[in-house]
Length: 265
Image: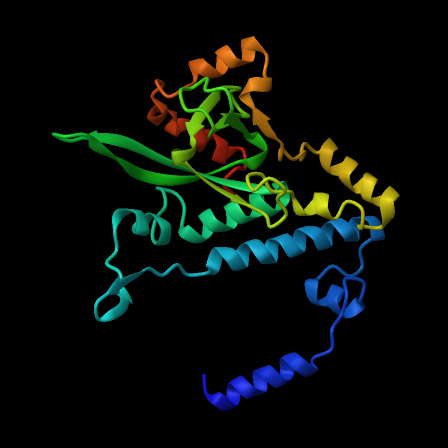
Protein backbone atom coordinates (compact mmCIF):
# COMPACT_ATOMS: atom_id res chain seq x y z
CA UNK A 1 0.00 0.00 0.00
CA UNK A 2 1.42 3.38 -1.04
CA UNK A 3 1.83 6.38 1.26
CA UNK A 4 -0.93 8.19 -0.64
CA UNK A 5 -3.37 5.33 -0.02
CA UNK A 6 -2.49 5.30 3.67
CA UNK A 7 -3.12 9.04 3.92
CA UNK A 8 -6.50 8.61 2.21
CA UNK A 9 -7.49 5.80 4.58
CA UNK A 10 -6.42 7.87 7.59
CA UNK A 11 -8.43 10.86 6.36
CA UNK A 12 -11.52 8.71 5.76
CA UNK A 13 -11.21 7.20 9.25
CA UNK A 14 -11.08 10.66 10.85
CA UNK A 15 -13.88 12.19 8.79
CA UNK A 16 -16.27 9.24 8.46
CA UNK A 17 -19.41 9.85 10.55
CA UNK A 18 -20.03 7.56 13.49
CA UNK A 19 -23.27 5.68 14.15
CA UNK A 20 -24.71 3.86 17.12
CA UNK A 21 -26.56 0.57 17.32
CA UNK A 22 -29.97 2.25 16.83
CA UNK A 23 -29.13 4.00 13.54
CA UNK A 24 -31.00 2.73 10.49
CA UNK A 25 -27.82 2.98 8.43
CA UNK A 26 -25.98 0.48 10.61
CA UNK A 27 -29.00 -1.83 10.79
CA UNK A 28 -29.26 -1.85 7.02
CA UNK A 29 -25.54 -2.65 6.70
CA UNK A 30 -25.91 -5.54 9.14
CA UNK A 31 -28.95 -6.81 7.24
CA UNK A 32 -31.35 -6.75 10.20
CA UNK A 33 -33.90 -4.17 9.06
CA UNK A 34 -37.57 -5.06 9.00
CA UNK A 35 -37.50 -7.14 12.19
CA UNK A 36 -39.46 -6.66 15.39
CA UNK A 37 -37.71 -4.70 18.19
CA UNK A 38 -37.40 -7.67 20.55
CA UNK A 39 -36.11 -9.95 17.81
CA UNK A 40 -33.88 -7.21 16.45
CA UNK A 41 -31.82 -7.13 19.64
CA UNK A 42 -31.00 -10.82 19.42
CA UNK A 43 -30.28 -10.61 15.69
CA UNK A 44 -27.91 -7.68 16.28
CA UNK A 45 -26.17 -9.58 19.05
CA UNK A 46 -25.57 -12.72 17.00
CA UNK A 47 -24.65 -10.74 13.88
CA UNK A 48 -21.92 -8.92 15.79
CA UNK A 49 -20.66 -12.17 17.32
CA UNK A 50 -20.62 -13.76 13.87
CA UNK A 51 -18.53 -10.94 12.41
CA UNK A 52 -16.12 -10.95 15.36
CA UNK A 53 -15.69 -14.74 15.37
CA UNK A 54 -15.17 -14.98 11.63
CA UNK A 55 -12.66 -12.11 11.71
CA UNK A 56 -10.62 -13.81 14.44
CA UNK A 57 -10.83 -17.11 12.57
CA UNK A 58 -9.28 -15.54 9.46
CA UNK A 59 -6.36 -13.86 11.23
CA UNK A 60 -3.13 -15.57 10.07
CA UNK A 61 -0.68 -16.97 12.61
CA UNK A 62 2.99 -16.33 11.86
CA UNK A 63 5.99 -17.62 13.78
CA UNK A 64 9.38 -15.96 14.07
CA UNK A 65 12.73 -16.85 15.57
CA UNK A 66 15.34 -14.53 17.06
CA UNK A 67 18.79 -15.13 15.58
CA UNK A 68 22.14 -13.27 15.69
CA UNK A 69 21.22 -11.89 12.26
CA UNK A 70 17.83 -10.67 13.41
CA UNK A 71 14.31 -12.03 13.45
CA UNK A 72 13.45 -14.60 10.76
CA UNK A 73 10.48 -16.81 9.97
CA UNK A 74 10.74 -19.97 12.07
CA UNK A 75 10.72 -23.41 10.52
CA UNK A 76 7.31 -25.11 10.87
CA UNK A 77 6.94 -27.75 13.55
CA UNK A 78 4.26 -30.31 14.37
CA UNK A 79 2.35 -27.96 16.66
CA UNK A 80 2.55 -25.01 14.26
CA UNK A 81 1.12 -27.18 11.48
CA UNK A 82 -1.79 -28.07 13.76
CA UNK A 83 -2.43 -24.39 14.46
CA UNK A 84 -2.11 -23.16 10.87
CA UNK A 85 -2.78 -26.05 8.48
CA UNK A 86 -4.91 -28.89 9.90
CA UNK A 87 -5.81 -28.89 13.64
CA UNK A 88 -7.68 -32.20 13.31
CA UNK A 89 -9.00 -34.55 10.66
CA UNK A 90 -12.21 -32.64 9.91
CA UNK A 91 -11.50 -28.96 10.59
CA UNK A 92 -9.50 -26.12 9.13
CA UNK A 93 -7.74 -23.59 11.37
CA UNK A 94 -10.41 -21.02 10.47
CA UNK A 95 -13.15 -23.34 11.77
CA UNK A 96 -11.20 -24.07 14.96
CA UNK A 97 -10.56 -20.42 15.86
CA UNK A 98 -14.00 -19.20 14.76
CA UNK A 99 -15.69 -21.81 16.95
CA UNK A 100 -13.42 -21.06 19.91
CA UNK A 101 -13.97 -17.30 19.64
CA UNK A 102 -17.75 -17.76 19.39
CA UNK A 103 -17.73 -19.85 22.57
CA UNK A 104 -15.43 -17.33 24.26
CA UNK A 105 -17.64 -14.32 23.55
CA UNK A 106 -21.00 -16.05 24.06
CA UNK A 107 -20.08 -17.96 27.22
CA UNK A 108 -17.17 -15.86 28.46
CA UNK A 109 -14.61 -18.65 28.00
CA UNK A 110 -13.35 -20.72 25.09
CA UNK A 111 -11.51 -24.04 25.37
CA UNK A 112 -9.40 -26.17 23.03
CA UNK A 113 -8.50 -29.73 23.99
CA UNK A 114 -4.99 -30.76 22.95
CA UNK A 115 -5.35 -34.49 22.45
CA UNK A 116 -2.00 -36.15 22.82
CA UNK A 117 0.05 -39.05 24.08
CA UNK A 118 3.13 -39.45 26.23
CA UNK A 119 6.05 -40.88 24.26
CA UNK A 120 8.61 -42.58 26.46
CA UNK A 121 12.31 -42.26 25.78
CA UNK A 122 15.39 -43.85 27.31
CA UNK A 123 15.46 -41.14 29.93
CA UNK A 124 12.01 -39.70 30.60
CA UNK A 125 9.90 -38.74 27.61
CA UNK A 126 7.75 -35.98 26.16
CA UNK A 127 4.08 -35.22 25.55
CA UNK A 128 3.22 -35.25 21.85
CA UNK A 129 0.13 -33.29 20.74
CA UNK A 130 -1.82 -35.25 18.12
CA UNK A 131 -4.63 -32.84 17.25
CA UNK A 132 -6.72 -29.94 18.55
CA UNK A 133 -10.47 -29.96 19.24
CA UNK A 134 -12.75 -27.08 20.34
CA UNK A 135 -14.77 -27.78 23.47
CA UNK A 136 -18.36 -26.70 24.05
CA UNK A 137 -17.89 -24.03 26.71
CA UNK A 138 -21.28 -24.62 28.34
CA UNK A 139 -20.24 -28.25 28.99
CA UNK A 140 -16.98 -27.34 30.77
CA UNK A 141 -16.53 -26.79 34.51
CA UNK A 142 -13.22 -25.40 35.78
CA UNK A 143 -11.94 -26.65 39.15
CA UNK A 144 -9.22 -25.13 41.32
CA UNK A 145 -7.67 -27.91 43.41
CA UNK A 146 -7.16 -25.83 46.54
CA UNK A 147 -6.80 -28.83 48.87
CA UNK A 148 -4.50 -31.06 46.79
CA UNK A 149 -7.02 -33.80 46.03
CA UNK A 150 -5.19 -34.69 42.81
CA UNK A 151 -1.70 -34.27 44.24
CA UNK A 152 -1.12 -30.78 42.87
CA UNK A 153 -2.44 -28.11 45.22
CA UNK A 154 -3.36 -24.89 43.45
CA UNK A 155 -3.65 -26.42 39.97
CA UNK A 156 -6.56 -26.13 37.54
CA UNK A 157 -8.56 -29.01 36.11
CA UNK A 158 -11.22 -29.00 33.41
CA UNK A 159 -14.23 -31.29 33.63
CA UNK A 160 -16.08 -31.94 30.38
CA UNK A 161 -19.63 -33.29 30.48
CA UNK A 162 -20.60 -35.08 27.29
CA UNK A 163 -24.11 -33.75 26.46
CA UNK A 164 -24.90 -36.88 24.44
CA UNK A 165 -23.78 -39.70 26.74
CA UNK A 166 -23.64 -37.95 30.11
CA UNK A 167 -20.06 -39.15 30.66
CA UNK A 168 -17.62 -36.91 32.50
CA UNK A 169 -13.96 -36.43 31.55
CA UNK A 170 -11.27 -34.66 33.54
CA UNK A 171 -8.39 -32.86 31.81
CA UNK A 172 -5.28 -31.28 33.25
CA UNK A 173 -4.59 -27.61 32.52
CA UNK A 174 -1.60 -28.68 30.39
CA UNK A 175 -4.06 -30.40 28.02
CA UNK A 176 -6.40 -27.44 27.55
CA UNK A 177 -5.96 -24.02 25.95
CA UNK A 178 -8.22 -21.63 27.86
CA UNK A 179 -9.25 -18.27 26.35
CA UNK A 180 -11.40 -15.69 28.12
CA UNK A 181 -12.97 -12.31 27.45
CA UNK A 182 -11.41 -9.07 28.65
CA UNK A 183 -13.92 -8.94 31.53
CA UNK A 184 -12.33 -11.14 34.21
CA UNK A 185 -12.30 -10.40 37.93
CA UNK A 186 -10.07 -13.29 39.02
CA UNK A 187 -7.81 -13.66 35.98
CA UNK A 188 -9.07 -17.19 35.32
CA UNK A 189 -12.72 -17.07 34.28
CA UNK A 190 -14.15 -14.53 31.83
CA UNK A 191 -17.61 -12.99 31.71
CA UNK A 192 -19.74 -13.37 28.59
CA UNK A 193 -20.70 -10.45 26.39
CA UNK A 194 -24.41 -11.05 26.93
CA UNK A 195 -23.92 -10.88 30.70
CA UNK A 196 -21.97 -7.65 30.37
CA UNK A 197 -24.83 -6.21 28.32
CA UNK A 198 -27.52 -7.55 30.63
CA UNK A 199 -28.24 -4.18 32.22
CA UNK A 200 -28.05 -2.18 28.99
CA UNK A 201 -29.92 -4.17 26.33
CA UNK A 202 -33.29 -2.47 26.11
CA UNK A 203 -33.50 -1.56 29.80
CA UNK A 204 -33.66 -3.78 32.86
CA UNK A 205 -36.97 -5.50 31.97
CA UNK A 206 -36.11 -6.17 28.35
CA UNK A 207 -32.66 -7.34 29.39
CA UNK A 208 -34.17 -9.85 31.79
CA UNK A 209 -36.52 -11.12 29.07
CA UNK A 210 -33.54 -11.42 26.75
CA UNK A 211 -31.62 -13.52 29.28
CA UNK A 212 -34.66 -15.64 30.13
CA UNK A 213 -35.16 -16.51 26.47
CA UNK A 214 -31.53 -17.59 26.20
CA UNK A 215 -31.79 -19.71 29.35
CA UNK A 216 -34.95 -21.42 28.09
CA UNK A 217 -33.03 -22.40 24.98
CA UNK A 218 -30.33 -24.06 27.05
CA UNK A 219 -27.75 -21.31 26.61
CA UNK A 220 -26.90 -20.73 30.26
CA UNK A 221 -23.28 -19.74 30.80
CA UNK A 222 -20.78 -21.35 33.15
CA UNK A 223 -18.23 -18.77 34.25
CA UNK A 224 -17.92 -19.66 37.94
CA UNK A 225 -14.64 -21.11 39.16
CA UNK A 226 -15.28 -24.16 41.34
CA UNK A 227 -13.01 -24.96 44.27
CA UNK A 228 -12.52 -28.64 45.06
CA UNK A 229 -12.40 -27.91 48.79
CA UNK A 230 -16.00 -26.62 48.66
CA UNK A 231 -17.41 -29.82 47.14
CA UNK A 232 -19.15 -32.62 48.94
CA UNK A 233 -17.14 -35.74 49.76
CA UNK A 234 -19.05 -37.82 47.21
CA UNK A 235 -18.29 -35.35 44.41
CA UNK A 236 -14.61 -35.25 45.37
CA UNK A 237 -14.39 -39.04 45.16
CA UNK A 238 -16.14 -38.98 41.79
CA UNK A 239 -13.59 -36.49 40.49
CA UNK A 240 -10.72 -38.54 41.86
CA UNK A 241 -11.85 -41.47 39.75
CA UNK A 242 -11.42 -39.23 36.70
CA UNK A 243 -7.97 -38.02 37.76
CA UNK A 244 -4.56 -38.30 36.17
CA UNK A 245 -4.36 -42.11 36.26
CA UNK A 246 -7.18 -42.34 33.70
CA UNK A 247 -6.17 -42.74 30.06
CA UNK A 248 -7.68 -39.65 28.52
CA UNK A 249 -6.54 -40.51 25.00
CA UNK A 250 -9.41 -42.99 24.71
CA UNK A 251 -11.90 -40.10 24.63
CA UNK A 252 -11.38 -39.19 20.98
CA UNK A 253 -14.84 -40.45 20.04
CA UNK A 254 -16.43 -38.09 22.57
CA UNK A 255 -15.55 -35.02 20.52
CA UNK A 256 -16.77 -36.62 17.32
CA UNK A 257 -20.16 -37.20 18.92
CA UNK A 258 -20.11 -33.62 20.25
CA UNK A 259 -19.56 -32.23 16.78
CA UNK A 260 -22.60 -34.14 15.53
CA UNK A 261 -24.71 -32.27 18.09
CA UNK A 262 -23.43 -28.88 16.92
CA UNK A 263 -20.26 -28.34 18.99
CA UNK A 264 -17.97 -27.98 15.98
CA UNK A 265 -20.22 -26.10 13.61
